[in-house]
Image 1 (cartoon, one colour):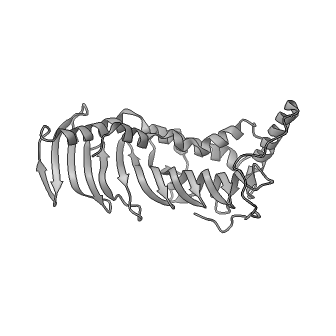
Image 2 (cartoon, rainbow, N blue to C red):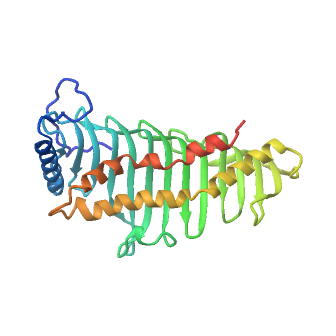
Image 3 (cartoon, rainbow, N blue to C red):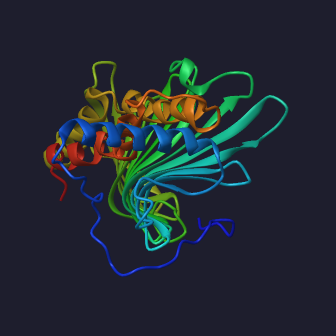
Length: 310
């Protein structure tokens, strides 16, 4: 994730992570100075240098554009990406018609994704904007915890046309589905798997199929490559866990929530990061809010709250 083209600022002694206070003796002058700093910051985003909101300490929210088209807007400390921030990856061409668009939004530690965050990627037509039509969009996202740049625990969501796929659980160091008490729901099959995954494969646990009303109509136990029908009344505890999970992820519009967060980033990038002349100072607040908007995706907290996992 680090970039050799990243400019290094001179290291200084440890500073607090707040902006340097402004003299408040004259409120009118203070507000004027604050607004001028915002304007100056936003006008300079189009350059390739690292732009700090606190230029004197070289620490704080900043924008950094890379020669390859990538961009980072977020917090900088110790010459590195730290705390809240968004990294936008330059699109990768897949063929003449489609490209892959990606970004990470969340916490950082010394240039690595570390802590709570969202990694989003979408296949989009080159002549269309991803955020113009949710129904036609196809995208994937991981929302959850990262450890030193790797997926750790959280929810992996995939939207392919009208179908939705959701995995909730842990991941291996190779970013593969791996762990116990994990879930995988497929909306096109109305099927939920609950149990143990190893290297992206479901190896042991339970399978439930749902009817049109969202109720379990059949249940199976899967073990040693054998699937056995156990009925819907034999294990009420497992049935309740699986019903609660399905209801949790289908009741709230988490896909729409993530689409909205992703779209906001792309709109901000399209409008301000690459084509800046004059910007209203209120966009400064949008910039800060976007850096923290990963907190608005609550799917993991909701699952932990409503699904009583063994």
